[in-house]
Image (tube, helix red, strand yellow):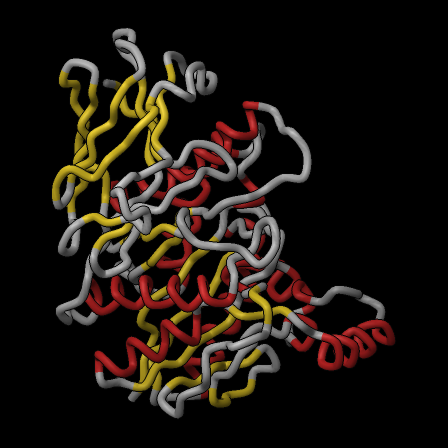
Length: 374
C-alpha cells in the first residue's frame, strides 16, 4: 500500500527553483505524472504542457502545443518544488511508500480554482484536479488518498482580492472534501513567502500581502484538520519564487506536520503566535508550539521583522520596534523608541518582503501575524 498526497496551488508549489542540486529521487516515492502515468518521482514533478487536461496547456493550438512540450523538455532550467523532499521524509519516517499527484499551476487565483467551475472538467483547475485524483485512485488500487499540500495566494494578495481570500479558501477546502468523499481530508497549507518588487508599490499592496498571510495563519483555527507552516523566512531564486534549497526546507516542514498530525509520529509541530503584552517601553511576544527554543542566524540573538502601527491603513512608525531580542525559549522582547499609543498594533512579517529569520530548534518557522492590538 501507499499514500497519495496532492500537490496543488500556484507556482511555488509547482516549483520554480533552479534545477541545480535538486532533491534526488527515491524508490519509495512515486508520482502520477501529468500524462496520467505512474513513475518514480524526480525533479521537476510538474510538466504542465504534457497534462491530459487542457487547462494546463500554454497554447491551445495543437501544433504549438506539441512544440511547447518539445521546447520545455529541451530548455527547462527551473522546476524544483517541495513535493519530493516532503515525500522522502514522510516515506522514511512513516515507513510507507508515498505517491505524489502534481496539480499546481503558476499564476492562478482562487477564482480560477473555484469549485463552481468543476462542470468545465479538464478545462478548469478544479475539474482537472478532481478527474486526476479519481483516475489515480482507480488506476492504482494500492494507493489511498491521504492529504493535500496547498501553496497559493500570491495572485490574491492585492487590494481587490485579499479581503475575500479567506472565504474562498474555506469554500475550496470544504468543496474538495465533499467532492472527494473525504470530509476530514488533511490540508497542509503554506503561508506566503516574500516578493521583491522592482519598483516602489503602494501601502495598500503591502497590507494586502499581510492580509493573505494572516488568513493563512487563521485557517487551522477555523477548519478541522487544516495546518499551516510558513515560507516567510525562506530565500528566493528570483523575486517571488523560493530557491531550490528553500524548497527542500519547506518540504521537510510540510513533512513534519504530516508526520505529527496525520501519521501520529513524533515530529516537530507548527509554531503560532500566542500573545503579546506591554511592559513599560517594551513589548513581549510569546509563541506557542515552539520545538526546543526560538533561534535566529544573528549571533546577537536579534529577531528582525516586527513592526508597530497606530492605525489600520499601514505602518505609521516602522522604526518604532528598533530592537527585538530572543529572551526566552518561546519569547521575544521588543524595545520601543517611544511609548506607543493605546490600541497600537503589533505585526510580524508585514508587507511584501519583510526580513524575517525567526525559527525554532527544528527549523519550524514563526509565522507572520498581525494586526495584534497591544
